[in-house]
Length: 164
Ligand code: OFO
Picture 1 (cartoon, rainbow, N blue to C red):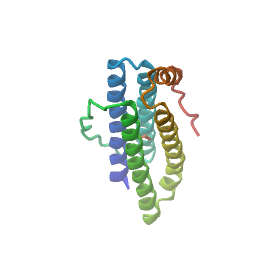
Picture 2: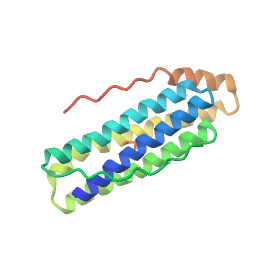
Picture 3: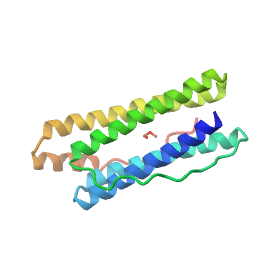
């Protein structure tokens, strides 16, 4: 279980790095609202990684960090970027579900309860991506509508979830 939790810290840190790279890409093409959205996502992912990091420590075990893989730097259109984001989140959801399965197999009920927060969080992550994908499909090639969405995404702020 400990090995799998340490791997999940790495996956969350990769998620953070991936979204930071997407944010840089958006800034570079002049979509500052999208860049803000991905910057907040980067902060959320760092929070996820640290939540597991702190849990491992609380359990009296050792966090062992691994190298973070290099993320891509080109992401195509905003629609393609959000489709890639959704695909990545589906991969993370599967990874969280695998952790729950392992916790149950090992009768590690504390970790199973700890992971419930992540199950709920992943529902929200995928739903956010799906909502933006739907909007981007409606927008199509309409640049002025794209800028309206860009403005909408510019107001997102990172709010650390309350500590349960
Ligand atoms: Fe940590 O939820 Fe996204 O990856």
